[in-house]
Length: 430
Image 1 (tube, rainbow, N blue to C red):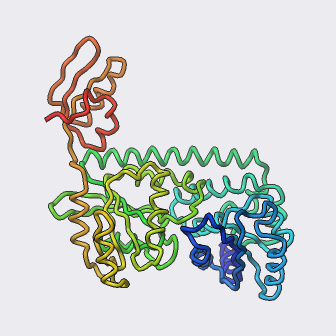
Image 2 (image 1 turned 180 degrees about the vertical axis):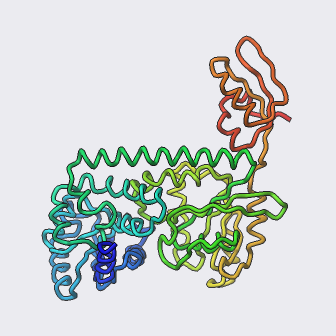
Image 3 (image 1 turned 30 degrees about the vertical axis):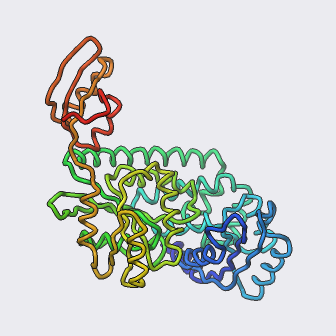
């Protein structure tokens, strides 16, 4: 406990310099906006921005990310401003990180490591902590050379939380063993979640997942819709562990609403992979509610970042209702214009409750029918599938021929999707 408090105190004392590249390839994410977001991330981690250094170049310097002249400028700024931390707006290679720390003689943290650090602070459940540690170990494994000496010199702070000095100084074999143990623990979590989803699907509850850019107001909207007391704050990644609550839709249909972790541009792929067990709640949902902060000037680019992550998860084609949130902080004319441009959109204020009833009706309209009636053809070698359909559905007709079992059954749509490859044809049987 005392060590954690010491780390947090040091993090609060961190004076940081932000470093980024103004690349022609980043036209859809201008460097100023990128560094503004990086500053918010740094603030969320407990650091204070004291300066920014930007270099216009097409590609990072392979040795030091920025050129030698900019490196010298950063050295001088660190001394003049008493900065103890340099945060780089992209993911550094192991060589770049080592070279910069050797030259600057301060901690150097890249964007990926900063996000991982925030996640390490925010994870509350055992599952969340496992997933964060998995992502951090995966990040640090190729960076082990020299990291022990660096951590010993620094003694904690941003970029050193989570697995900690001891675990990062052990050899690669032991770290891989730890990662293997974590994967087994996550597999158990996934099995437990699958059983929970089976129960929800058998009860014909529609599942609705709130997705969106970090700090878009998802948790506030979740609390407004469900009356839950989920923690909500005006900072990035305030919610990390997913929460599920019941909600009743306008025509009496039961639904389960899931509050999920926010997305961000340049979200580390390792983090998406590590959090796949949690993000499965999104991939299994019937409807996605994309919460958009319309008061943000770059709302469109943020929306694109969300759908990039949904694409990685294989969930981009699900039915989507767009909740244009924070209309209480936005120009009314701008909001009305967006309603005409964004498909299936509803203007809401999670803070005041305006538009929430309309949003619930839109969710209900977008949700697929909970029951389908399909005809199945199950070969005898896979007769266990026919038994599964009997267990989870209502069989209306069953016949046997030389090739297998023919069934017509009514079954909950999410469950039916698991055996869709056994459908006798592509049409719903009436």
